[in-house]
Amino acid sequence: MLQFFKSSLLTRLFALLLLMLALRLPLLWWGLPLMPVELRGMLVGERLGEGVRLYRDLYDSTAPLAAALAGLLELVSSRPLWLYRLLALALLAFQALRFSFVLNRADVLPERGYLAALVYLLVGAVSTDLDILSPLLLGHTFLIAGFSALLPTSREGYDNRRLFRAGFLVGVAALCYLPLALFLLLGLFAVVIFAANSFRSFLLLVCGFLFPYAVVGTFFLYTNSLPGFLKFHLQPTLSGLVAGTDGLPLPVQLRLLALPGLVLGLGLVRSLTKPPGLVFQVKFQQLMLVWVLVAAAVAVAGRGVAPGTLVLLLPPAAYFSLYLWQKTARAWVPEVGLLLLVGAVLLVRYRGVFFLDTALQLPLESRYAVQPDPRTNFLQGQRLLVLGPSLRPYAHNRLASPYLDWRLAQADFGHLDEYAAVFRLARSLGPNPPQYLIDQRNLLPELRYKLPHVFGRYQPTSTKGVYRLGK
Image 1 (cartoon, helix red, strand yellow):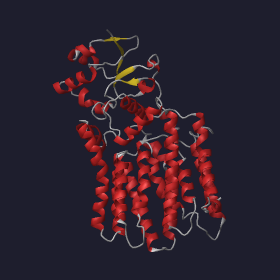
Image 2 (cartoon, helix red, strand yellow):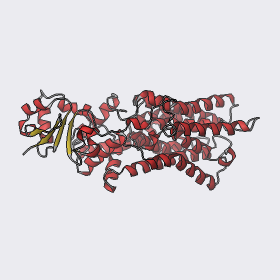
Image 3 (cartoon, rainbow, N blue to C red):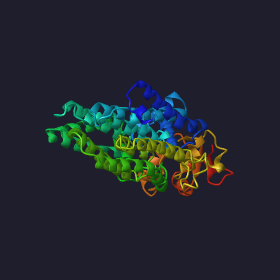
Image 4 (cartoon, rainbow, N blue to C red):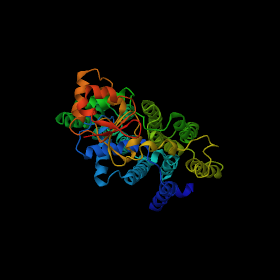
């Protein structure tokens, strides 16, 4: 198998894509439940499709480009879950092939082929977390697309125009998931080890990074959304208030990262025992070590539970694993190692099918999917306002207010003793109140007292905590 994928013929590429589909399609065919990050994206897309302005008429921390993509997908179909899954699959395949192409073109190792892409897709299939379209997966795609621009076109220095492109793509990635801005540190290290004029080159990189933010800031300025962009996206994400709330619990994430971490660790140890290669190859190895450190910082910024965290380890794991597949005195050892990796991936990914999740002490990702609330099953296709953190009622209903993220909604609901907050509530909900209100925090009595013309119209239903808008 190793010799087959060490070739750069197109037939190997087709075999690689077939292998990726064989690993993923059975579970996708059986159906994966709706995950919280997907539901949030769909709710954002629906609101944007209704003409609301992000951060001004919608309280959510979703990054601008991730929200814009959700709005575009909503134009194709209403809550197109199949399109979310298909796009996630295409993005991961693009990342694997693009990264492998960069390694081959830069001659980072003597042998060329699709082994890096093979490991990228194998390790990426260990969890269904990368089968869902997350802002981190989307932003990481732009990082991979711009990674080649961090490498010099010749062994003597940079074409400085490429540095602007590299910074620009890092900025675009950060507009999908803000903590990815930390990859500017990777660009700084690349400039230091590759560029002749480090300070000037790094300024060019920073200018490229700031350019997409200048464009987005100008857009929000002219749509009166700039204060909301600062208040509901930049400040909460930088403080760690919102990042990662839709992901798997940290213990589950760490267990899922064990196999990619093992591949990365073994490849790293193997690379250190090999004699050093060309100067450029040594520098590239150092660059990938810095990638590991920056990826760890991004994971910490998302508290380790951001959806798609696994994708941060795929490039260094794919690169360092190449040292595991090099020729040795015992030619069968790398072959057996690759087969063991394939077996381990199948075992972890299909642990639910083989009833091994208990034996492996690794819960299925589906346990953390959005489960509709049986108490509100009678609500289908209704416009809701949920006073609380749960998004479950929105699984079969629509958001009818700016208050998607409950913690950000505390800017209003947490300050009901302030006139400004009460005024914003009246302005947001007064013209077109939601058909149903679900009170998870027992706030309705106070809201009725302070805004009787809005909340005084809600009448209790037969279900406790659920109220219907009266005439």
